[in-house]
Image (tube, rainbow, N blue to C red):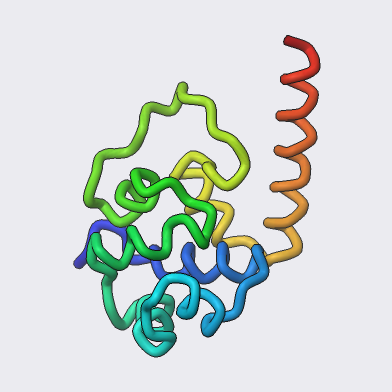
Length: 120
């Protein structure tokens, strides 16, 4: 079993939140839509090469995707994360929620980040 069996679901949820179609992601990343679809369904596990190609279009840092995939150990929880760079644990938990909830949480995090910047 791979380190994170939910990786495909996380990738799909992020793609849908952007919103980006599977074909759109395939065109941007240079990866076939059928291969990406198999990854999202959990039928295939992405190589590091594929993770690098899809990280930026999906708004992930490469290291974040590598951590989610189990190729790297997670980043320290004390590090500040910007939008599109959520803590891997938060991203994993959020991916289990409906898209409407995900968008709401991202909106709230955006507001909190803006407030924190204004207070500094």
